[in-house]
Image: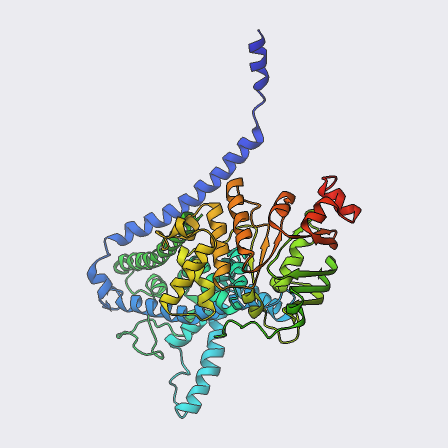
Length: 311
Length: 266
């Protein structure tokens, strides 16, 4: 008898709140995952047949109803590389200043933080207009006046200004993720370094940055892959509808995968013939960003493994 | 690259047998006063233990001896600290040079995620010492000093983080000793270790005393009694009493000291 009574007391009323929350959060996960699956499935199904060596290595032909996307790939890759070269050093340096050198009460540091936060909230089309107004009309024209007798060499849309415009768009993410990576370096390691007579610079170079490197790279690559798919900032600053040649100079215009998708979808003279090309282009763009994300994941896994092996 | 500073010419402090002195040292964090008017002498080649309940300011005092507190935001230090007669907080004093002569070991062992060898060599490298044989020789000497050499000599290239807790702490001591400091500050160096590892650290302290001056913060009174020759008792940010360890533990002058060491509070 006793046993049954004791057992009965353990059975409580079901926790309906917990169950409801589990169902609701689970449903949210399923919804988001299924959207991702639908998008991926559609793009892959439509684009996979088009994907071929020829598609990746030739230029568009016959009014963009045939041929490949080579110029758009080259344009996207060079745009992304130049953007990275411009954004990452500036962003990492800013983060180092904010975390390591600026005092907690520094007005300048607070101003920089406010600017970075606001920069992150600016719509990307505004960056495009800014690039046109500042880089092309102001900086570019000034260069032309001084160096090229007013001939339009840099005072027009081109790869350089598009890259810099995108770099500004990417900058806040690089700054914030680098800051977080640096702040996650344990205070004990800095103190250990300082206590044996290392200077601040040595501590940053030999202890803080190597320890934060995994986090910095991960955040940076994610920022870059986000920037690589942006179209609005390059719309006025350098992207071209169609070019018969590949960009070779900083002041060349270029084609871009994201913009090419837009062009194929809206400007085609023959929708039926363009559709497979459109899918193929979207798939190539997806694969490029996916590749960058995979690299970021691999780096993160590696640095986690390292610190776990360490601990 | 700055050279490791040579000891200055003889000074009053040196002649009197004092390695470091603090006069009316007050440290504030913002509005809070962590230590107030601390005056104490650190005798040369003597182990000075600082005891007291948590939050009494003993660690703050320790960290102000080699300017490790400088990085803390909102801190203000007033009063006077000297090392061999030279003002530690004087104008133009480079805290980096202070720390090369006054090393520190922390409560939680904090090896770098580098090899055992590179952990110990770090202080030498940042001081500008190059030349593989010189560095290797000083790394070995430091590891022997820290009674760790025999345990790690065959795996110097393995990560320092793969060592046991006690070994890691001795690695940190070796790292501090490699730059050959004149004073070693130890902030509860054995509080996270098991009794056997603690005993090893305590033996080590007794051996190191012949070569350098040691100031150790501990909340373990038996430890203070075992390793130190002089003991200071901190309470509520003040230095209540300092003297020969045997005297402090048997015939303390202050009532608060007696209450603490007999376990009436703390």
